[in-house]
Length: 305
Image 1 (cartoon, rainbow, N blue to C red):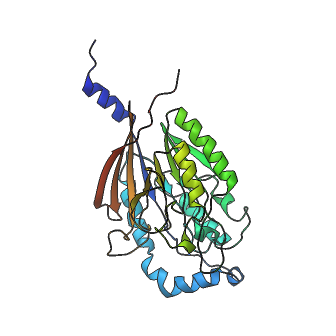
Image 2 (image 1 turned 120 degrees about the horizontal axis):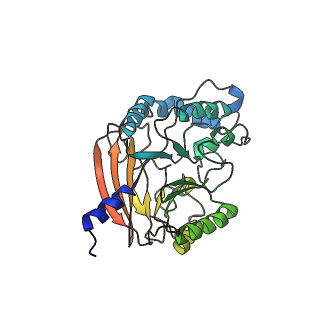
Image 3 (image 1 turned 180 degrees about the horizontal axis):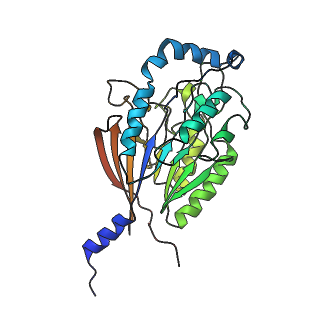
């Protein structure tokens, strides 16, 4: 019996998963004890007061979230770090309250601002476990899409903001990518620092990009999402053809389209030959300013009964 192509296309659309990706909201800080600034945070506070608070506006973030909420097809909101400005315990608590009010279930990885100075787990990521995890990498499943969260953030010396994926995370990531690939999942990796040279100066880069890129090249991934750069770029992971997506900072008030607050509207649709991935980039008002589609080559096979 001949199959109905339209019915096949319709059934594939029914299996589509839609996700939103944003980053770097840099929530305005609450009242913080001055003792928290007797370290590198002081330099960041000076920058916040003198410049950043004038261009990173909570009203812009609120408008962006309102636009995201209007898209009822979305299953989750992926946030690739820098929810806070200084990474203090007061900000972690404030961010947890903010995360609990979001219009979609958030999935969160930390950024460099969230680990600006040493801080205990109890006062930091423990506050976000509902939306992140106690260990990295972790996985969240949305249909046949597996979102893998990595932690590239760590305290660094003044005037630097580099990141690193340590060996323990890389070993676990390799195992996850291999297993999920064998099972036909669409593997979306999210971290704060982009694994590609020259997107940022070395002092702000992922300093072990070659190690992570080599791992991704060996085991594969369908997409990598990042924050940190505040730019809505699309490139590839260093030394691979894996798409690498940045996004404008969620609070950024800018006239530059690539720097203006934006979010990535992603649709993943399974096909026999792989995954169709559609990207619509929208600014904080909801205006679409970029649209792309591509296929991955992994077989999007269904799990055995």
